[in-house]
Length: 378
Image (cartoon, rainbow, N blue to C red; front, side, top):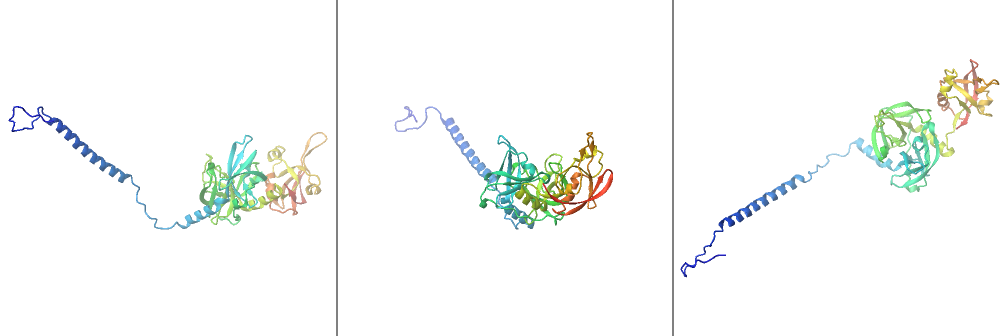
């Protein structure tokens, strides 16, 4: 507000402030200018920051997937619907363990490893669409590490896997594993067939022969899942890994599909394997060695009325004084050497029920030959 000086002439009205306010005006003007400059720099900073935080331009892919990628994508897309997650439940319905499996047929049969469902109080199968189904155990073969389950899912949800062959596999050909390692469902890995004809021990210490070795990544939880060829066909059932740490070390094993395709129908029909053999019980190898048996399979017991009994084979017994009288020791089948009870079972699996074989036995330290007709044994 301006004040007029009363000493001025009434005709001359000078607008002269009584007190000087110019320093205040200058400070206000300086502050305003500073704010304007700061605001301008802030706008520039935000604009530059937005430019820096913006997504990078996307380069257009110059080529399609390569042949191996196309193959892998096709296999995964096709087979994933056949692969299931299996949960082994205890008495308290808590999850004791889990693994993988695959749909065998439209009747709801599911194939997995025996050790995945061993001692389960209940079993749950989770399909690709994440629907879960209570499963019943149809049959199992511990010495093959195979089991067959059945679920009551409708056919529209069941996608049976395509079955291939394993007798014509070649070392070096591509192999693909699909399963649920560490519970991570639908995990897919690629490798090669690393070796053929491997041997591993089953859960009951029987030898599984002609096992496939692969370097496709296999980890705990893959057990029971499919091993596939480049056509997406089943060539094996993943069963074990060789690893000092328990994680993938590039050495995985799979039961060959030719064996699977022989065993599974028997498990579905009989609940167990019906194999050609002798209706005898052999002594555990360690026990036989304690009795001084250095080779062959010591017969512990012979089933009454069996073809083995009719052929005159003798089991181990005690005499009237309680002393152990050794039974016959089978050392060869049709001139094929037999070193143990485990090896006897493996040799006999190459025959058919009803075939006649010539056994070479040791009886009272003498070698004899006995002809026996093979019968179906469990």
